[in-house]
Image (cartoon, rainbow, N blue to C red; front, side):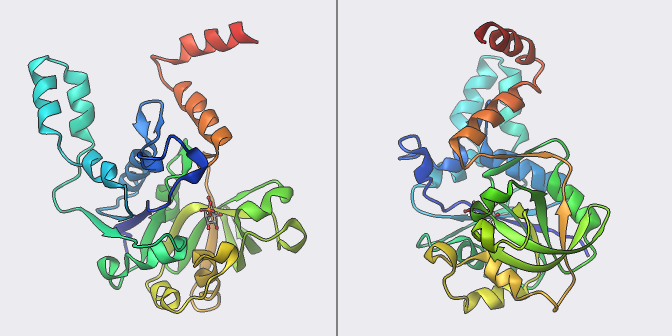
Length: 284
Ligand code: G1P
């Protein structure tokens, strides 16, 4: 079975990036010249996703506008023969009807956001991408979809054992190449309570039964409805694996990670690599 749909939870307030995110959705913050959410959508497309479901909130209309035509802009770029710019705004368009938006009426946590997409997803396994987790290199969701044979899957990476309280953490079982059996999951444990230092990164493939669990899920870490808690109830019901993806992950939900991502992605660009390297060399 193929994973056809992806959920993008984009309802969060972005309080860590104020004042930048007062009127601008945090998912629209650019890394070099592309908003975070566009990287996530492109990664989903590379994994073969055909339907994109955005779980939005108030003040997020810039995301809808970004994925729609801007007739004025396109006409102007055409008249001025700015063909490269025109291609950039046209190439990113998805086929009509392949993007849906559902509004999360309150910021009640990732689990709640995912649950808001239940009627659009209906009864099939679905992927979830968190735009804050930006991955450089091989697209992680594609790797996961290729390795997925059913059940649930989360992207995983080793983190500093002192930082477990920032992540969902798994209890690992046997490993098979890039795959690791998941025997348990806990959201944001203190280092002394953490079952390992293997963290969940924001790429998931979940079974539709998770929506049923989420509908009665009580609040967890941070007083929010946590996806991790609902996923922990799937253990034993269906195969559950972590996937150690090959790319490098940047935490663009933090200022440091965001700045690092900008530098790392700029260094991948032919037009920016040389001048940026020279500038860095002259600074330090
Ligand atoms: C969310 C998840 C957490 C995961 C993290 C990855 O947390 O709840 O399990 O490890 O994303 O970025 P958040 O960063 O939204 O607090």
